[in-house]
Image 1 (cartoon, helix red, strand yellow):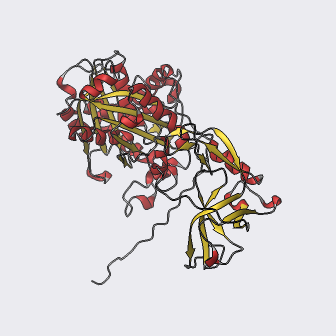
Image 2 (image 1 turned 180 degrees about the horizontal axis):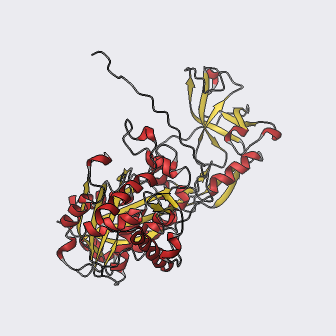
Image 3 (image 1 turned 60 degrees about the vertical axis):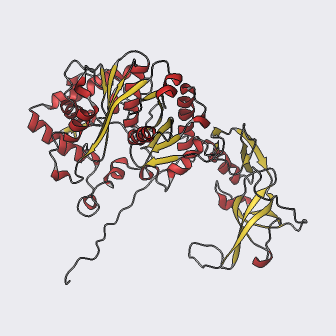
Length: 352
Length: 161
């Protein structure tokens, strides 16, 4: 296996509605910043891959026009996933393992504000039996939250504590959208949105972009003083149909975590892609992170949730802590699909 | 097989509020004023009309605004003979790439006021605008292009990298 590392990360601030810049204009400075920080020239980068969704953009082939932010001349080797950028990063990691490229640019962009995002996300469901009923994302998350609360014995108070901690931690994250000091008592006074979920249990609607540069072996050592080496990465998925799996647990996360080697040594910090409060608790259990492991010090997706980007940001935030020397071993997780259907776990380590 | 369900109807629609972006907004506002605004790439110096805010070749932001005239040259064309309800003109008609004077990237345009079989590469054409009161921040502010009657220009051959 080649040693592959995150060598730079950049992101835009997450905002509720970006009405000035289009996707390319929003993405371009982020791509430039990530590439500049890597010290590599844009032309040196061997592979480019992105994550985005035409359903969010409201237009076909939006990822093709996004290439204007990169400059596809002379022609470049490029790919795209209609998923969160974290899964594009997985493809880039595989590409680097094949030896066909020594470095890769991974980026993601998403404007969740352009349409009714709860309805947009509905269209990822089974088109015959489920989508025609239009269950929105919050309602599906609420089904999962109820199953989790009943199975785990946790309470709505435990969910509120996740939200309060996220928003408090997000005060130190200039890119976060929802930050501040609330008490558990405060937020529990809110009415239910879809019981058992209240507004604070749900993510904000966000527009944003992020980019990561990966590099292999000596290219990584040249590009970064302290690369965040990917010591393990794995992606597992469960059946699409919600009735076929135990919503209160995430077996795919547990298996991805085992294969990525999460438990092989102490974890200094974890960034988990949990857009809903109960999902953080499900993921923490699945990855067997004990209570001492700080989770989502960035505020997580509860503080900034640009769809197609929030998972890649988790890897970027975890890697940043390793690159800056604040962590030796960090875990990042990204999810896709309804109610944690697919899960990717990535372990990042410094000092090799 | 009898009684097989061969199809189901699941109507769906989503509505979006598109964000044109900074550069396209300036271009579209220009359209409403009868002006054609492009942008120049700081690296390769190409002028993009309409601008998208970036140079897709160099991958850098374009921010220098360049106004071009409505006159240009046909660089290639095709004759459309397929009728469509979506089209405002009856076939056969000519669509062309028009390279506006001062721009480096041709764009797609309808050619009228000229028999379809007389359009040619190198032909000089000009924009015909809708009346000022009808102009909007839209490409439709230009109704079509028509020949200027100027002598043809020699269209540079491709392969100039």
